[in-house]
Length: 118
Length: 416
Image (cartoon, rainbow over all chains, first blue to last red; front, side, top):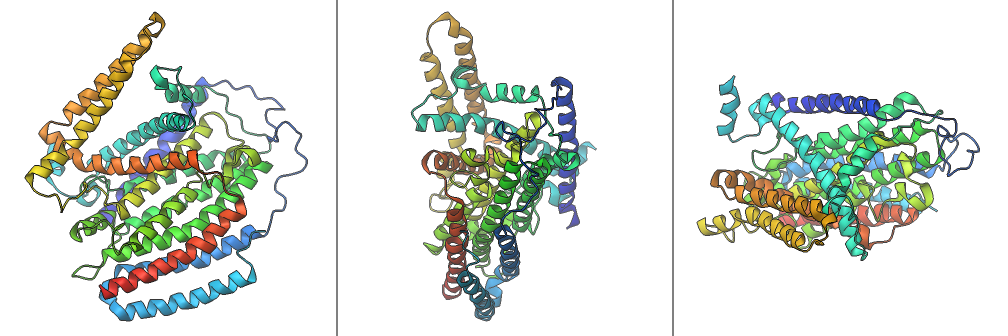
């Protein structure tokens, strides 16, 4: 049923035209009077000390990696869930084994402290 | 051409499935307008409800009871100067709000307001909604990075970490609801949004009450995760004013800022409508099976009209209570006119052809509205979490709970 997907592109095209047009229309009515202080990065009135694109804590990377692992796992669960009753007890058993492996990994990362934020 | 347009009206599929792009476009425009109106209304309602929860009056000056406040705000934002910081990355800075708005609006293509009232009905509807709504994290990261400033970057990092963490719990809760759709004679479930509501119809139970309390727990997980996904209180760490000024959109101003605002509220409506579709019976009216028959059908079909008449009555009551001073003359007339419009809509909803067509949309919107009220209620009630607490709830509570509920639901599905 490819025609089911056509409205997505109509919608995206519609919004992608509407929004820039509105932004440009707003440009016509708004004042445009930039100054040096106005264009500085906002730091509550204090001069910014250094570039903002410095280092930040490694935990964000850990969260991102864990997300990929668990999200892919969730995606694997979807086909099974759709065919759940047809696959029956056998499918459930298979999925329990899959989840068991995953839970072992989950317990391991918990013990490793990857889930601790502080 | 005219045949092409009218032929759809008699069919019982969505415009997308019927391949009728004219009606698909009409629905898209209706959704676009409806969303904009809903966001404007939500703006007023949130400030008003929050104010009353905190024993304040809220907006009272612009229009009667501040009814025109959101319009005044929109005008103000439109004529405000739009600043792009000199160190910002212009292209990414420009694209980021568009990205956020496009993703949070596109989701509404598959939202089923009724058995035929959806732009299109895809057989991967739920996956599409989850996937597209999680794309908005890209826009947030782009906004934070492009601003080249400390607060936005921290806000964007926090926001992305939070959104991806809660997405897992959200996905697991959704899987356990999808699993329930397959408990029929064929043994095959569905991911189509319309199909999920029809499954609840044929199993004669909302999935929130299925295998009590398993459905309820899954709904609870989703309800917590959806608040965190949309960066709302009590999980509004990315825009915690006391720490990060305004989070990832600190450097945005004017109309571009209002796009973020628009995206936030439409994302809230989007996740609420996923919750309503999966657990709260979508467009179904309350008790479609227990209270069936012609009489009950008639009683429930009168509810939309009566709701609007009730709102009109409240408005007229407020009109009568307006101060009698001549200064308030315009405001009193305006409020009375608003009440008259509400009453007219209410009367129009009693006309049989309108009544039958509007039913599904009304019940769906009512459930979504309830969910939106809960959002405001949370914001008025809960204090903000700390970031480590937030990650702890996501990874150490909701994720194991989600896996547990999924396994128990599967076992219950095999046994019963």
